[in-house]
Each structure stands twice: as C-alpha cells, then as structure tokens.
Length: 272
Length: 131
Image (cartoon, rainbow over all chains, first blue to last red; front, side, top):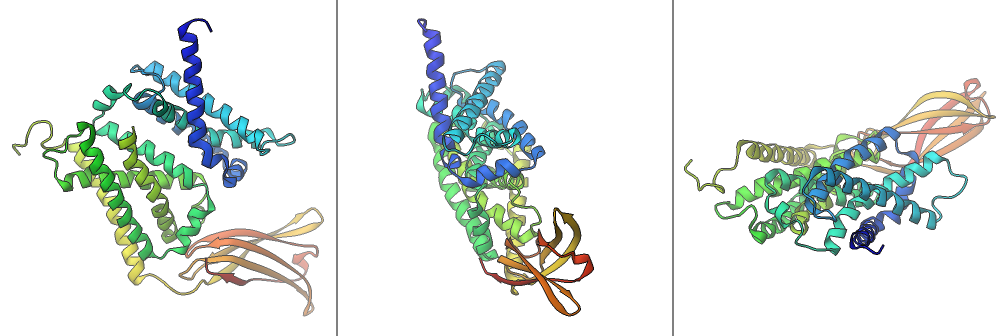
C-alpha cells in the first residue's frame, strides 16, 4: 500500500462501506426484512436484483464514489458497490445473530441479498456525500429531463424501500379512509413542490426562468409523484403487501408509501 | 410558439411524460373521491370458504379462504372451525388472520386430529377488531 493509487482504493472502500451502513441501518434493524428474506418469492428477489443493477450504474454516473464518466467504469463501480452491500449485510446480519448455523443456504442468501440492495445504493450515494462534492457537477449540469427523471426514481426507490417492508405501512393504509388518502396526496404534492421549487432555483439547472409555476408543477412535482407511486407499487408488490388485496386497500397502501417515495424523489434533486 | 430558446417549449416527449404523470395522479384522486363519497362504508363482512382437506402428519389440514365483503378493514380476524358428529361437538380449531381489507382475501389453515371428511365441519369467523 505504498503507492497512492492503492491507498485511494482503500479509502474509496471505507467510504463505500460507511455509506452502505448509513443507508441500510434502518432496514438492518427491521425484523420484517429478516422474514421477507425467508419467504419472498425467489423470482421477485431475482427480478429485484436485476432491476437494481442498472439503477446502481446510473447512480454511479451521477453520484459515484469515483469521478467516472465512462460506462465501463460505472458498471465496475456498480458491481463493487453491490459487493460492498453484500459484505456489509452478511457481516451485520451475522453479528445480530439473524444469520446463524443451521439456517438453509437459501434463507441466508435471501436475507443478505435483500439487505444488500439499500446498502449498495448507500455505498454509491453516501460515499459521494461523505467525499468530494463537486465531482459530478458536470454530470449534473448535463442532466437533462431524462436524468432528472432517473434521479427522482432512485430517490423514490431508496425511501420507498426504507418503509415498504414494515407492517406499519399497511396498518396505516388500513386505518385511513379514502378522505385521509386524498388529504395525504395533497400534502405530499405540496411538500414536494416546495422542495422542487427550491431545487429548481438552486444550481441553475433546469432554469426556471420562463418556466411557470404550473409547468414546474406538472413536469417535476406531479411527474415526481407519479414516479414515486409507481416505484411504491413495484416495491409493495415485491414485498407481498398487495397479494389478495382489494383495489381500495391497494391504492391506499400505494398512497401511503408514495408519501416518503415522493418526498424522496423531490429531495434527491436537491441532494444529488 | 415563439418561445425563448432553451427554456421555452419543452420537447414533445417531456410533455407526454408530464401528461401521463398527471393522468396517473388524477385517476387516483378521482378513484379515492368516488370511494369517499359513494364507496361502501359497511362493517367488515367475513365469508369463509373451505379450499380443501389434506393429511398433514398425524393431523388433518383444512385450508380456507377468508374474504371481506364489507366496506371496512378487519384486523385480527379469528377463524373457528367446529367438527361435529351425530350432533355432538368433537373438536374445534382456531386460526387468526392479521388483516383483511375490504374486497380482499387471505388464506389460512386449521388442523384437526379427527378426519374432517368423516364429520360435519363448520368454519366461520368468530370475531375481528377494527385496525
């Protein structure tokens, strides 16, 4: 480790590991995550990992722990982040006694993979927040609408993932009436718009001059909310919260999850 | 439209995305409004339907489907099965289901040591609470 490149690598690793830990903390200590790892349909788990990798590549492009602007590097960074996520999940699940001898390999793999998802997103994201901030100024300056949509989706996924596994989410949805759900939609859109509006003025990307209130609202707030809703729908389906569920209950559960997901979508434009 | 260049009119696909997003949100709002005003607000109505009976070790498993045909979510639904032979109760079994929202169904099972195929089996919900 006498050369600079080597120590830089370990520094990157340490950052990635720290990022993974910060973002996965709430889920590491959520018991529903352990159960989900056991009973989740394996095809849903596989689909989730397959869907996760492109997201990691995209995040690496916009916020990676090394300043890369080439596709191959982004893919490598995404894979490294995934490995860091798997390692961290395996380490802490073992430390907490969740993974122990006598468990079937299938159960262990299920548990680790599920937690590796938020951890690997954290590895890419937070390491950038902990490291240099200006690395990706250029990528973000160039982030046109498609880039903004991707960033909103990633933010929504991270936040939705943090709440969707819990039983609290469905309990809240079942306690609500249709009127509560309607009010929550209005509140979510309002909170999001305040955030989007602030983000719109910051950094001068997507310059709001000439962009009216309504255009900002339709193109970023409403679209961000719709993305949050779709991401919620996918995550809830993955976590088996919608099986056998009637339409009203399903819509209300999505609206509840779309609150953090929508805010996540809006905030990610500020943070990233 | 003689908009300012760059920030004037957004491209077509951008407007399409905004349109689809608006439609999705609008559809949810309209649906919830409809449910709020004209939706069913009656108490939970749990209907139990027996799926099948199978052997499970020394016991017999009766699988059932519980459907909520009411308008409110039922929590901690207790499903109770009673086995009778010649008008005399010989065995009971209970299972509880966490939540059954309106229009939804959940599955469960009851274990009996006597064979339910050689007796009279009645399964029904015996209670619930609102979440």
